[in-house]
Image (cartoon, rainbow, N blue to C red; front, side):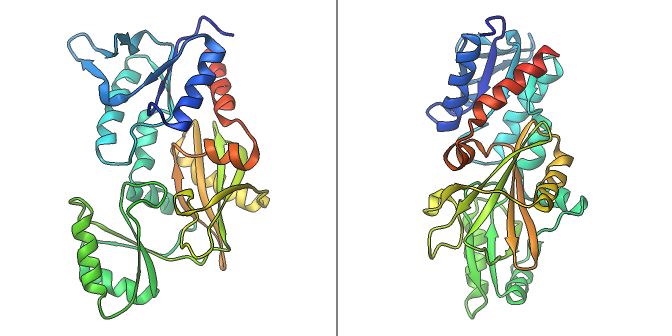
Length: 297
């Protein structure tokens, strides 16, 4: 036990992965600080942040597991506060500005494209009529919010007589988001993959096996986790995908499509439960040990 270390976990109280990581850190250090950013106060006069009487500035480090219970633009504001604290010398894993780069789906997608990573065919527009043409070209698409996880808010559309109306209804439902993110629906072989990296080094892979009849493989739609051994080529593809973001812990979502593997996204928050249930690997402990090692350097 490293009693000299006081490490806070940024997460969601009651959340499986947040609680697990906080438990592991407590086991290793004797201290347990699970911090809900919704209750954080930043005093700019003193340059200090406080959570329930705890001064974050006095900690040796912070591990970000979750910035909030659901993806939204307001999480970027929370990351800005953590970036400010990082600039004042507090060690934060992963760096808040690096997490911000993957939080927004558009930003993440464009960086992957710039890095030459194969993606599903995608069209981005604010114009519903252009979106109709994209649906007609692709035949079947997934409309994706810019901020979401586990397929929340995603809608599958097919080309048809009511396509324009369906797109306009969808556009009106996404809380002021005018930009439409339209991606060709990929025919998955019953599963997709989560390849996990820590400090840029490959850790392990789990598969999300979809429920029969579901268009996505998420556990919210009845999917389950399973162990998987990807080819060296897929591991290298995922390594290249996560490299530009410089995250301390990340999961790369990959699909083995008919025309070759494609990357859906790079995540700053996923991987713990998939590795635990699918592979029996305690990623929370491995990550805590990684952070300890970094703090000792």
